[in-house]
Length: 101
Image (spheres, rainbow, N blue to C red):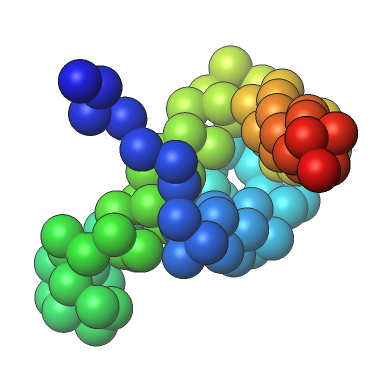
């Protein structure tokens, strides 16, 4: 049995918050925001370091920071292949679901 799960709406919302905040940031700015989010989670300023939403936010900051590590520009979700893949997958699932009805 697979341990993978379909991301919850809370996870999707956390990713969207991070992507919105990261839009226009360069690598150093995103890294600083990631470190600030990590510190907030450790300090208990958020809903705890192990909560699903906090983990989703931290994972997304880490992913975006990694994406920008070898990129001289700023972050743009419209140019992020991972984000575009997610959007395409969601659209395909919705289309397939509509066809089954």
